[in-house]
Length: 293
Ligand SMILES: C[S@@+](CC[C@H](N)C(=O)[O-])C[C@H]1O[C@@H](n2cnc3c(N)ncnc32)[C@H](O)[C@@H]1O
Image 1 (spheres, protein in one colour):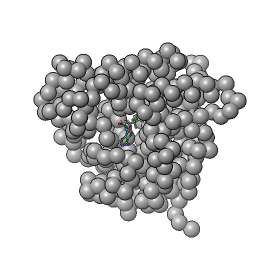
Image 2 (cartoon, protein in one colour):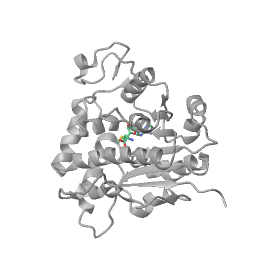
Image 3 (tube, helix red, strand yellow):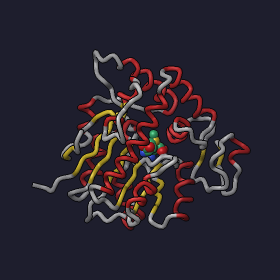
Image 4 (spheres, helix red, strand yellow):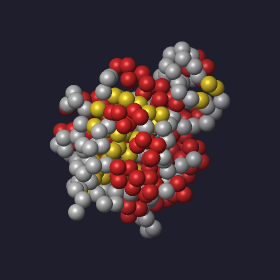
């Protein structure tokens, strides 16, 4: 375990090229993979260690198309942000499990459409926190909270969240590729319900998740193998059934086309390339909170 301080050359000691001279908020262990860094490696980023890349290589051994699913998840997230700002008129985002910066981030996609959009990023990975804090300096409407999304009461009571998110006006809650890292015994449904309960009417929730395609599906074995790779490396990566994932949006109205493979959720254009099996195993939905009856 190394504690990386301000100005520490991470590239020099750890083989991680992307985070130099940033304050890392906590302890970074280069001998254990983290899901934020593994996802970064899948997306072709530089903020990852050899242990993270090894998880990716193992996934690619299981299915060479595994990185396509990671790219699908990220491009879905950006399409959702464009929809929420451009169509739904959302101007404040609570992005739980925000991840490492990629080619385009939530605040960039949102602020391209409306300069008034506020984004509060939440993550518990120290490398993500370092980038998040750096963002604060360049974008006054972007904020970062170092917190555990499995503790909704703490996240919702956090002073930065309370200061910058106005819970009397519609909010977008982003839970993208996060809830499959919450184990059953940690109560993913209760966690989602607590967040949803705090949202005012006309708020939106975006949720993406690994799919268990169910018994009899030709892709079930693939789902199980990919799930096992993540469980053994980062400790979580739960595939859940369509019904289980829908239950996390209880009480909300699904935006069309509902819960579908993310590549099928309002794609930017026609799909000409063959669809890989793994692309069917990452699903997402956007849902609106109705007014109370
Ligand atoms: C697979 S990445 C997804 C990033 C982004 N939401 C996306 O869809 O592109 C999952 C992120 O959730 C964060 N995360 C996982 N569990 C968390 C927890 N309990 N509290 C806060 N963040 C968490 C990880 O650190 C990582 O940055």
